[in-house]
Length: 367
Image (cartoon, rainbow, N blue to C red; front, top):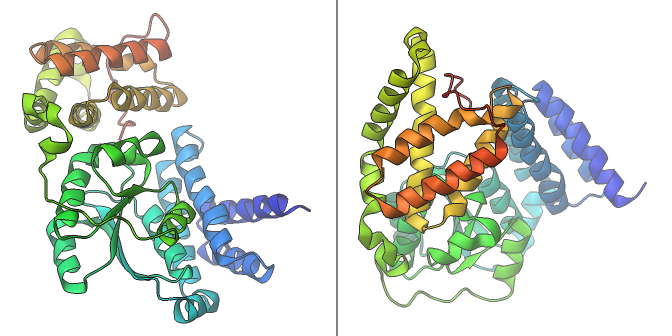
């Protein structure tokens, strides 16, 4: 058996245990892998991380339920906790070189903490003193921590692009203390596009890449405080501010328009109405995020992903079109927003069948 085959076998064992909700079997599998001379870093990056990624992929394709997704994630978190306290991890932390102190945190509002936790453990193995602050860290609390501890670097993680404005605020606030920032996570776009746009000092695709970059030399020290508009001059047009601040009213307007178009909505249950409103709110939030970074690709990737999630659940992708049409009419005086919605419509039409244009049926599956 090749090394790759061996890793694949361990991934399957962990996957089966995680989906079954068997944290003991999952932990036993991870510890057994260590006994087979798989390094702890390899286990974290090439077994645990891919299994967690598969959890999301299987939910997207409707192969597992929301309950199974939450269960598997909880099991994987317990596996990580067990590995973090394994003698191999303790020895590495005790005997490794003193490379510096790093704070690892998720952006305020970001609850997907697994990537940040894996990064924290990899950095510990590589000899860093790590302050792991966990999920949803408010920026003022993060800054207080930096003043108290004088960390050498901050690693900020985010998986959801709607958190990019908050990420930008956190990056600039950390840099204002003189602390360089490394960004990571799916929220920062393909190949770290938005990390660079928001002025992060470095970006890394995964824990190994982050550790390698830090080992290559210190990140440059920030030189001068700056405002968001210094990085993103298009924010001067106030479109992002207007859309983000009026999100709730936009949802109400779109819901009202759908009710006028579709008499069947009168028979929606309260739960269906709530789910429909939540789905529309997600569309508005991703539109606002795309306005913030001025990138149609962010909005179209979200809509294409959403279309796939709907299709996997037997809901036609074209159900998104009436909501986009109504939102476009509401924002027709906003040039950038209108252009983004046009791009979005085109992306949905490309994913939908020609007859697919009934409104969102209260499925609640975009969240």
